[in-house]
Amino acid sequence: MNDVAYLPIGPPQLLLAASLIAVNLALSLGLRLGLTRTLLIASVRMTVQLLLIGLVLEWVFALDEPLPILAIALLMSALAGVSAVQRTKRRFAGVYWDSLVSVLSAAFLVTGFALVGIVRVRPWYDAQYLIPLLGMVLGNVLNGISLALDRFTEGVAQRRAQAELLLTLGATRWEAGHALIVDALRVGMIPTVNAMMVMGIVSLPGMMTGQILAGAAPADAVRYQIVIMFMIAAATALGAFGVVMLAFSRLFDRQHRLRSERLESVGR
Amino acid sequence: MGIRHGPLPPSGLLLDARNLGRRVAGRWLWRGLDLALAAGERLAVSGPSGSGKTLLLRALAGLDGLDEGEIELQGRGLRSWSMPRYRTQVAYLPQRPAMVEGTVEDNLQLPFGLAAHRSTPFPERSARRALGQLGRGESFLRQRTEGLSGGEAQLVAVLRVLLLEPSVLLLDEPTASLDEAATVALEDLVAAWLNGAPERAVIWTSHQQTQLERVANRRLTLAGHA
Picture 1 (cartoon, helix red, strand yellow):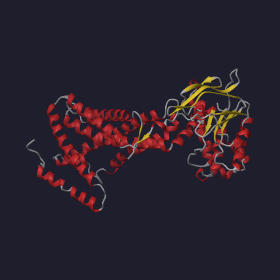
Picture 2 (cartoon, one colour; picture 1 turned 60 degrees about the horizontal axis):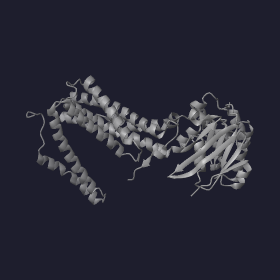
Picture 3 (cartoon, chains in turn yellow, brown; picture 1 turned 90 degrees about the vertical axis):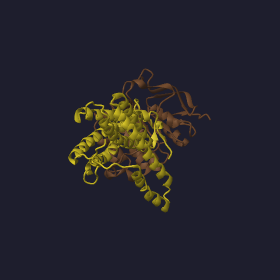
Picture 4 (tube, chains in turn green, cyan; picture 1 turned 45 degrees about the vertical axis):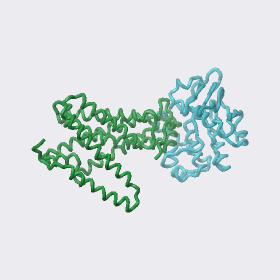
């Protein structure tokens, strides 16, 4: 790790970077945005979480054993599954479970395929590849799932009369929920599609920038970025589809009844 | 389907619900309730607000669950029916009708795009004839539903259901927000449907006693225990 192609950042430089938060604080105080406390908490959380994960990753990278690496991967996925639900406004019994199952299956399927089939990492569990690739995928699947789930549950609550109208006219639950499902999946995919549209023109993605900073040739970094974007697109679609179908089967039961009473709004 | 009706059981009952019970928030709204509907019958369900009239109609349409009891349609238990098919026979109309975006015609055609009705073509002539009897012409079909009055929307909703030729119609306070002319029009529409075939029956709920006396020949009163 000594002869690296980038300039390392030491504690004094971290402090200097942290001083940039003064811009946010000044704005918040000056305009009375009421964000001061939240900003400080967010800054501290971000810094502490990243420093900790840095230590954990150093330890995991040194291990070279599949089980602890998989355990970390599982933990990351579980956290993603929980966070996805926490951003939604309406919940139902089993929603955490649905989110967890969707995140896990989507992220593991796609990351596994990329590790073994595309990048061909040996051994397949090499933490240097598995953890960052999975992390990128999880962050995006989380967004997709929470947007799709929020839209679907909101649709069930707001457009209840429409769905029930169809049921009273003899629609199957699938026919009655179809418009809501389609809408939720579309919304879940919007961030990914938007990102792909402008990538490289408006935005230079973080992972690619990181690789370039770390000394990778831009042409190589770009290829990784392309791989990761396809992974993200597939995993987000799978995850959003999974969670919406699971939510659908709980809110439209087998007797073709709409069970919107199972939805509870969460205050905030 | 839709047009043909299954043979009635020996009892001659179209709808036979026994020992129905529904609990809400720990107390029974109604319990041990029997409701038998023979062909041609017009049943009124009355009772104070909160006595569970709407929940009863919704349960009969299979839209809400029951805590106790059995429902049979044409001699077959609810559980042996596929619910979409059951609901083509037992049609529930809520107090406030829902419309899909688009024109009156889009709304009338809506059910015929569903799998349960796909084998039946949209009965355009019956629709036009019924609208004509309501004093509404060609331009009404092209009107967008956002612009309809409450009464007009309710008439469209009733017509939409009647074009599917169900055997049992469940009307939940259908005229609560209608003026007198629209109320008469709706009652006429239902009466014409009822007289159109022998094996049909209707259940009404309403707050207006005079209306229930006019449209029903039998009454079921929900006590609404406090």
